[in-house]
Length: 361
Image (tube, rainbow, N blue to C red):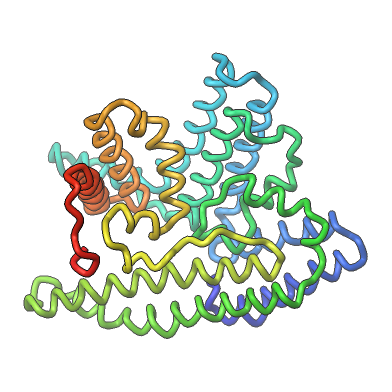
């Protein structure tokens, strides 16, 4: 179910919100929580009900590992084994559904063999809920979570429908604690008004801008071998705008929907095309993904603590994996590698101390 669909706007959202706050008004807080869980699962399963069991298996496995991590001392062999078990569990599911076909087809191409390429439909939002839960496991290993999180609270943390399919990528302390606040069960006219403003703004970005640009993009990309230089540039720039307004629009709608339920989701975009450097760009574009890659990949690799050369290697590795996260294809890997290269050049340029004029930057 898409945020911009009639089914969502005219049916799912008003019914979900009305029942949630109706139950809360009669102090049936557990029932309201279970209703929101049920509604979020229905929202997810509307696209393809067959992937609901996979989502629930992922949630159950991660909750159990996270709970066990909260009970053992951090840094021990047992805690490390549990952490790698949980990460491996997530990466196995993600690897099979998202990358199996890409790996097999790449092997076929490189070695000129003919293995059967599996026909696998990618489950909606699997990259987002996998990264969300990996972050939860790492935080559990570090002793930053509470082993007393209830299973319903954890389920809602993962499946809360505003952020389930397109982010933002949340940490446990940004959401689970919010669901425990009693005031969040009280209907707020102010939050509804602000939430509607965000939702309408995001909806306009998606429908009026991104979807209007899409036909121009499709025309150029479907005839890529026939277009002229000017047409190719036009198509590339149009796709740049379509991609931004589509993803930024969804992120704004997610923030608005969260506010309608008194939940403040983090801002995911901060005018990234106003950036004056690649470093600045990645502080503005898909902010929660950038934070995830920094906190759970770049820093654990050593960050900038082991010299400049190691810093640049860590940047390249982080962005290569970030590119692969975006999609299963060599173009995504090359894209990630280029951004890693640009970041290393940007950091090196700052060492030179020559500042470009803002307009040129």
